[in-house]
Figure (tube, rainbow, N blue to C red):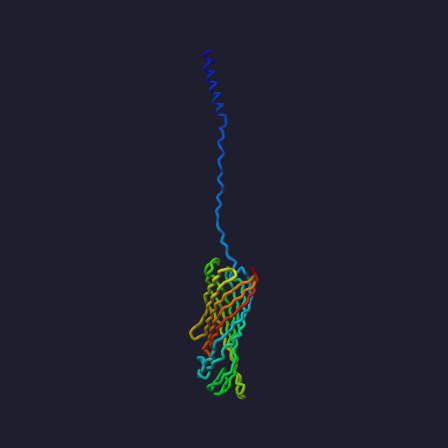
Length: 288
């Protein structure tokens, strides 16, 4: 009996220890899973305005009420420049033109425009004159017809801001311009006189800057200025300002333009002219 009692106590303690060790620990309360953090990024909205390239292709016409003088001058290769100088009649006020615009890169535009201005009138030779190799004596009644053509290709590059989210926007203008000046001088009452046709051309890259103020999608103000010249060579100065109103797919623009040119004096004769005046333009937009 004495040996059985301690043995029974030891066996009971071993069974209790095994039973406790075999029980699974009681599960605690479930832990809450943190929700994933979502970064809230504001999306920039670019206003859909007419000067945005997403508006697409446009074609238009303009009518320019031109005025201004033009002069035929003796050049560096002339032996008598004074007898080759003639004030041409002022430009007529009816000058039509065309303008085509298309997207050309992100936020930029390619604009192609052109016009033709004419002048015509009568004058009197104040001295013995020579125009384009033809002689006109003092007192001859001269009839002068002339025309000036211009074609301009302009890449309007948006400088700031890009994208165009601000109302005021600045642009760089990278252009190429062609000018053709063609006077024709005759003396209808002089049977011995020969008609003197002449032509002088300019091919120049022009550089400039521009600014647009766009307070709304349907209205904006535009200013442009460009030019190029070389000492003793030809030059071009071109500037304009306009207000543009948009009505659905139609734009109506009104403003003023100044255009000054000189063909190269490194010839027997060259031409200098200035055109200025108000204009009105009508454009049709193909796009948004």
